[in-house]
Amino acid sequence: MGSNSAPTRGGRKRKMRLTMIRSRKAMEKKLKQLKRLIPGGNQVENAETLFQKTANYIFLLEWQVSALRTISSLYGVLGSNSEDSSADHSKDLK
Image (cartoon, rainbow, N blue to C red; front, side, top):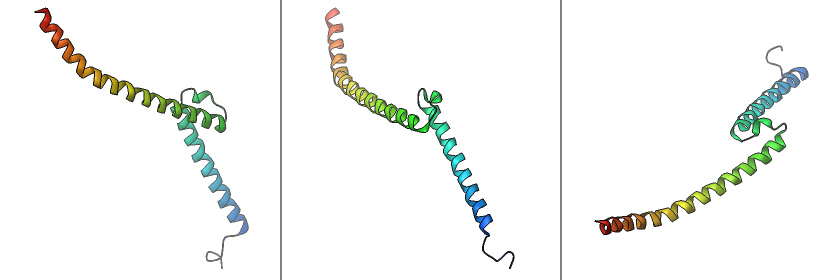
């Protein structure tokens, strides 16, 4: 009976408890990593606040990417015209 029998009730509880502990530790590790990525994240005490700060930070990053794309496209267009006009000005100076 010994090794082939189903796990005892106490064995199942112990296994569930160990699984929960591992899950909690894995989640705590991921939260710690997230805290390092988010500005001011190390000062955050609870997960809910950390998730809110994370969402705000993602929004800020998306806005910055959008702004940089706009600036890049403007300078891409203006940059080629500026080079031509600066070449024209240097011819005028000679």
